[in-house]
Image (cartoon, rainbow, N blue to C red; front, side, top):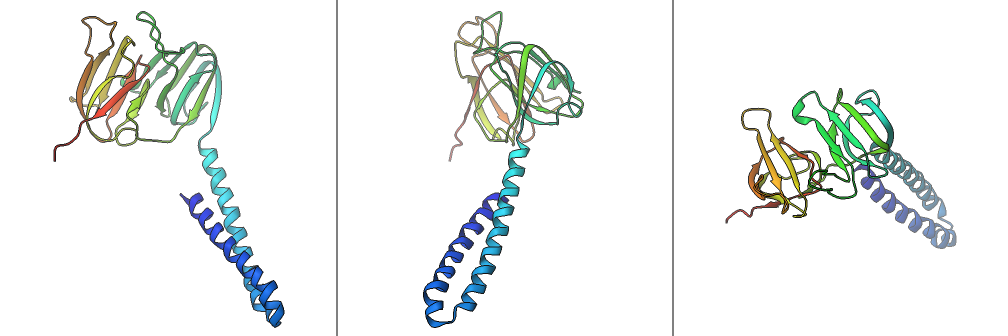
Length: 243
């Protein structure tokens, strides 16, 4: 936000500076009254330079806020080895296992990386997007190199394996939820408020017979956790409200 503000100010001041420096050399010198124009041009240049420096500072801060780090196989603790935050996690070679154990077992994840959604007996996901909280334990096995990329919160209707928060990543409202790719076998979705209204669904694809549901309807409310296990991609179709 501040980056955009300083960029606009810098552009406006640059235009003013160019205008007055032109007046200084064209009109001011002819009339021998160039001093006021020159002083104003210098002031404008200094203010513009300050805005440019601030723009670059805030731009670099924004870039620094969304870093990508790499971790080898092993055990890690959030807060010590990696900062808490919202991450998209990928295995460089699309292989291996990741386990994230939260303070609450409801937030724990256990996934195998792969190119797509794998098979009935071996469901895989290409990435995991989740929130890492201080004290969470991470285990990486046979991934060789795993990238953790900090990501911004964007409201989306297609979600991958991991943890999402209603209000940050999903608009509150009524939805029909189904697999994005019907050929995928399926997995579990937990919708948590950490009280007696928690819900759990097994969302199944075409190959899953007599197991789970093909889609379900749900009303999502602010601050609920939407946790997806062993599913490549889920689509949330928002129901239109009647006028």
